[in-house]
Length: 106
Image (cartoon, rainbow, N blue to C red; front, side):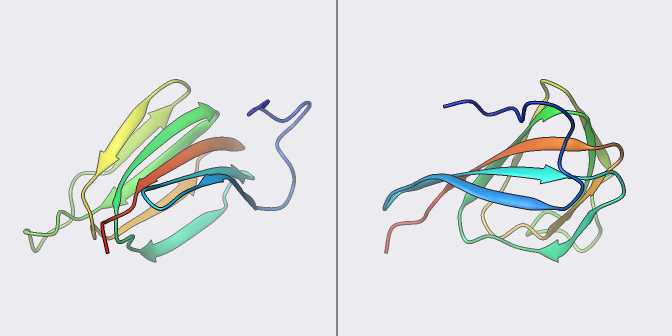
């Protein structure tokens, strides 16, 4: 399965589920330059891996009142976020991000 789009990143935001099981979900995000995913949280632990471009991540640890410093993920970089950690993404340039969610046991 090819992860990278052939040609430029699509002009519209795209979210494509690549795999989902009881314990794991893998999603490919294509984000045009300037596209923002507003503050949200996920029930599982997650990793964000920038495959193309550059994204800015703003997050806040679950046990802290203040946000963490902004992180920039360039191509090939990976970031881990705790279960339930509020976060948002901003595509600094057109970007492709691989999102992996370890789903909690029910």
